[in-house]
Image 1 (cartoon, helix red, strand yellow):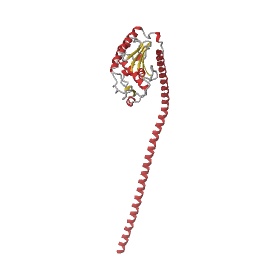
Image 2 (cartoon, rainbow, N blue to C red):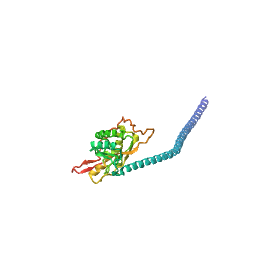
Image 3 (cartoon, helix red, strand yellow):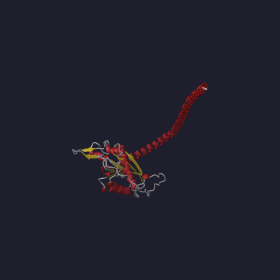
Image 4 (tube, rainbow, N blue to C red):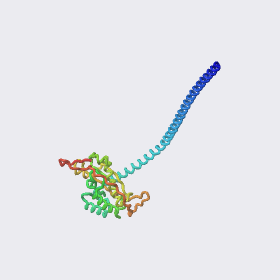
Length: 305
């Protein structure tokens, strides 16, 4: 009996050892399987990411190819626009030169009734306006038409331009083309506030002031198809920039009344009875900028653009 019990105990012990070995092997295989599964998942994720990146790259390549064709078209279009703009500038310069080169002794550039009305207009506003009858040019003096360093038309100038617009819209003048030309003296724009307002140099300032006068004329009914606007900076002086009085003369906005009739544009007739609808919206006034002459501590003139 004792011997039998001994053999039963040994058998049970053997079975116990066999069970432990099988469990350890199972656990090891399970861990290995889990590790392979993790590796497979990581590989699948990397493959998916690589595919997505490849798709993005393919889209970028296609976009670049298509963009290349688009850029070629855009370049061609811009080149054509630049050529047209250059043509318009040359035409405006030619008209301006023709007006200035008209002999002084050749008489008035405009019909006598219109010349007389414009002369009376200038005589009524001598501090703000000059009229060159021989060339058909009305000159607005910048020092009174604008605040210092600004392209915002002053309140007084607006009322004068209103009266001027009524002359331009009259039957005697409504058929003529107009050119608005801005000019400055030769002093460099250096005031930070002036530059901050967008008048980076004399070219910008002269153009912005011409645009302001042209916009004011439009606001009072002068048709946009009649108007051309240009800025000449300090390149067309009418007096010496070596003196303060000469510089003041050079700071001006000219309105040239060209002795040729308005051409129809964009379906707008060139009839002398046409009047543009006054604009209802007005731009927000800019702050006054110090660009023109200001008093220095020792009372010498200082030009601070």
